[in-house]
Image (cartoon, rainbow, N blue to C red):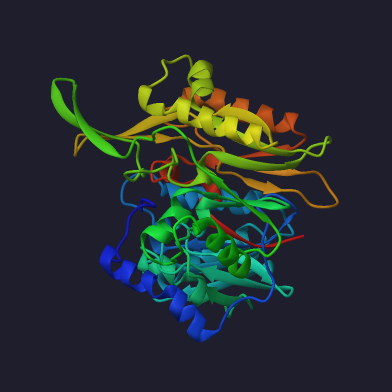
Length: 421
């Protein structure tokens, strides 16, 4: 499932979203002192995975399910003390239970099976954010969500995970939020859409003040909100025809980019990684660089790689006082010969898991792409590994994440941090 797929009609979602602020006030259900769970600070103590049947069932033919292979590899490599909450479908519960047992995680995992007809996806990160509220973890859902099954994930697992549940009058998806020690990033498109869709209202010029109040009320009472967006025009998704072996094909460019977007790649967790503070006290960020990827692989930089957009965002972050490191972000494609469709996508290693326990070595878990049709990407996988080692991290390379990346996600998108330690 592509992360931009939606099965809730836009008009229905907008109508529900427009009543969110009023509904929240009438329900009088809000956190008392919310604090977001960090993206990269502390060890990964507890984590949510959503593993639907389509990620488990083996397809007919000789090729294994690429999602299942990636999940089994991840389970084998996660920190031993990380507890898991896993939502799956009833039909594949025994198979997922076997995965947990094989990785030695049966005793430290809570497996929640739900109805087979509930169409949730692999994208556990998106449907909510997680806060601590008076010491108790809780899910915070957005005003409305475009994927019906994923909108119900927090409701399905909150009781089993002993977590609270709130709904905020915000346009929000977890993959567009990154949380540091005293700040949090949100991709600029979503604060703007919060007002465009009528979820929040403010007098002209007062939008930012209203937004800060609502963020403090539902997301984090202390951290500083910092928007992420380009000052340059960002292309929106498009299709165009081209000739291949004497046949007319269609290629998809700028996947996930809506008209008017200020983000080059759907969600900011696809091109920004948080790496914690360095010895000089500055917070370190790793920002994707398509130009560097093309140099390493030895290919021409594609115009639709949007290198100048990533450069612009990196420049802004440096000006804001961050220590910014650039890592290779390859632009590749997948061909559907039956449909004569070429889909361009970024093979992102920024979409990683960061484990920084208070006692112990920091570790990063990196998706890899030097597989199948792209053995040359072993060089960019190696460059990403070396960059993180230079930041003082042990590096665990995960398996092949092409099947995820072509659908606009990777390992950071298929989990939700529930607790840090």
